[in-house]
Image 1 (cartoon, rainbow, N blue to C red):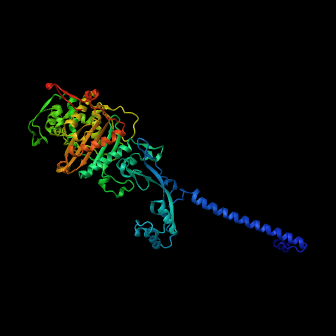
Image 2 (cartoon, one colour):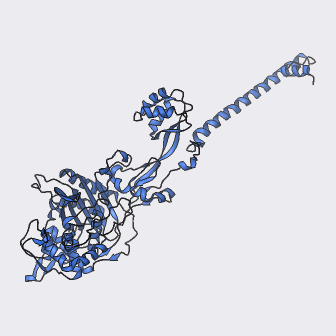
Image 3 (cartoon, helix red, strand yellow):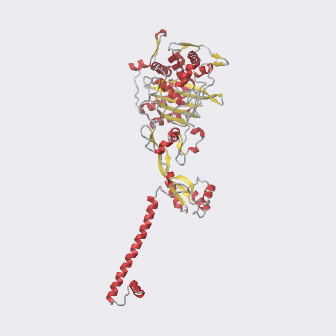
Length: 572
């Protein structure tokens, strides 16, 4: 085809054709041109649409590498959920968007920074300007934005700003489990609590991590401990609830606590776990361990009597009673009246080696066994002299954690078997290790009940639940010296004592007396009532129904018989 004929064809103009033929040819050519033009528009719009879908949907969460040498696969930070014993969610991951900049594209760093500060005012202006002026292909500006913040930043229309999808750890109950769960860092790495202990398992994400804690019990415990802390102006507090047969921690609190979403804003004291990391002399609570050792070794029985007529002196030390009876006391009376002198004499009878042996078995001389990184080791006397044996008998000279005390009391009341403490839900009770005989355990239950009915634990009494426990008040040891009027007040109790299921502990750090307590801030006045309130709330949640005090099985399980004058001490 010649060039001339080809040009005619393009114009639809062929001279050799007649007028009608040329008109039909022109119409056909116009239709072809319209079809070709339409097809080109369709292809163009399809390409644009594909690009938009690809950018906004198909590549969601799969952005290109953000910096030199960075693989986007490393940004996958999804962790497994953490749930309580009933499957209630305690920690989970939520998708968020983080803001970064390609500083090479930012035209005016100063103006862009000032504009961005209107939406994110907490950013530092100088740092922001420096980042936007860096000419780097990638620089973080703000991690984990809320959807509203993302929308507002996007609306600013600043060139060079982009979003990267990430995962953020969220704790639905806020502060409630802060010390047990711990928290993660900005990259979702576990750095405290269970989040740190189980970091690898949570990253593998083979399903939720189920803890032994009960959210309902945790809430009741924390609320009552917080009320006691505020009422008595304490600087801190700790609370624990443990299953005596499995060693499961049902609830654990340490106050003050912190927001796990913003741990960096909390003072160090708030991040300190007083239940597992705090190490304290627990005072007269240790008289329960002392009495159990005396009964187990056979150096004492319920009818044994000890001289508490006057202070006990050894070397330059003098052991006195807080409210002395100034007479000979039986073993039950030593507990009821919380006699330091009587306890020290009991300890002298079985000796330091037996004391160390049984305290070792009870876990008092080692770090607590629990799945948390924040665990404090006991402060043990070295050398362990006779005076140490005497003072440890009433809770001075050996410092342990509240968790160790709760575990030790569980071992006493559950039939004499010690099982490790755990924050993981158990399927039945582990085998454990026998520390005391069943007989010793049964006697201690009755003696603990007697402390509540006749002794310093009266204010913990809850009708129908038959609490048994022991008070403990000790001066705080600061820089090697005891500080007067700075005390730790603790009450620990098991319930129901005819068949114990749970142990509850409340410790108040430096409580102050009130008008209602007549100025006293000892454990019987400030901690015992808190334990009673906790039991009142949690017993129904745990399926424990109140019992009738006059039931024959209750009387048989809790009364104490003494040969002296055939006298019975009713502890029910």
